[in-house]
Image (tube, rainbow, N blue to C red; front, top):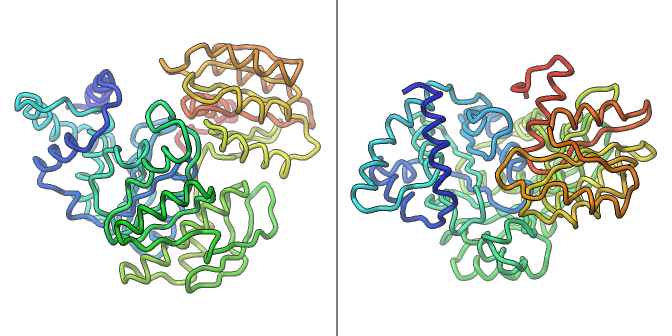
Length: 439
């Protein structure tokens, strides 16, 4: 099987949609020899910040000399971005080989009366098998959706991380913070330490209760683990960290936004727990250089100069609040041309209400997804806050319209669902003569 055929096979599996539960994943991995039981996993869940936190964990461990696999989703430009070892993407030929290995097992499962595993379940099995074959020291495994019902939850990790809990994916996870928190807290395993940055009392009550029931130690970023912001620029920001055992001054993080300091403190606390339990040895140099080398595209990512373009996948209300805070903090006094596009199952009205008042012009575009729904509805919401609003269906054309509208003191801000942001980022990079695959 070639890579193109493998991707067509995976794409065809999306017709089975989302079908939650661990039975199919458990059975598939059993037929593969249970590789998930032979690999050391750090399981990262939460609503926002999972990918950033996973990237920080991996960067520090890699800098300490460990071989670190990461499985994250969704990807921006290439499916191979989801599977990395020490930052290097999986080769397309390996994807084809893994699908060739898995396909007979999938067909046998269906013949034996099991439901067809979904695309994400197959992707998860591929990740676990691949990283086990590659003998990584650690696998940083990002939850796909939710926690308890997510296919990644077949693992028993060294450590569980719940970054935060907010309102997102309500059709699947619940319509209150408490309901969603119960699903997110489903990744807590008996006796396995948990680190969280969740701050909502209702959410903390759920996580604390789950940890008590399962005898899992709970460490909170913001209570016992603290951080103090330092100087910041458009290149990144510095901060001091006071953790469980370590006190680290003047750390540098090349990511923008106050929320990334929360993610960093969460990642550092998780690393301290791993070290405390004897799973790794980390020097201060590994902490410093690891954080300083973190790359996580399309999250408050600044590209270009004339005009500057800020790209951020703020796909829910909490993400929009973080973006608005960053716009006010880093770009005070600048006019903003905002290019936006969100999926139909998101809180569009709340996101627009948070972001549109900061713009002098808003361009609404359509995410390249069947879930785009009535994408032009966002224009009506935006007109409640700003007069200059237009709709441009093609994402590339919308980006070019935003760039053309920007004056010398303006910022172009591209935000919304990652499906849209990825296409927009590709357009901006190509216009600047850069490879969209670069990170």
